[in-house]
Image: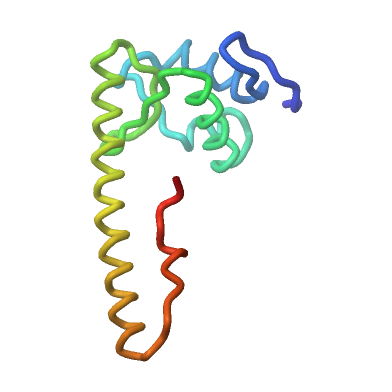
Length: 128
């Protein structure tokens, strides 16, 4: 694969375009989801590269969804409902991560206070 850029939606790498073409041909709708490991194998690359391609595709407005429970995998949303369901899953996961983050910060603050350590609280703020 080369590092050239092409797509009408937004400039994306050729690998991302190849992955999109594969998904369009094989993975429309959640019942046709494919595991990321299959994409890695198919395109002879590594997981991180494929994940970066997924970011490119989503930023270009491609309705790339993923199943976060069995059978797992990526798919292109067949309709608005599939996309909406995926967005709800992402929102739920984000809320859970936010709660876990807050709990971890409270624990660090308590441990620091017990040990007399001054924390830089700017480090713990969410970026705007």
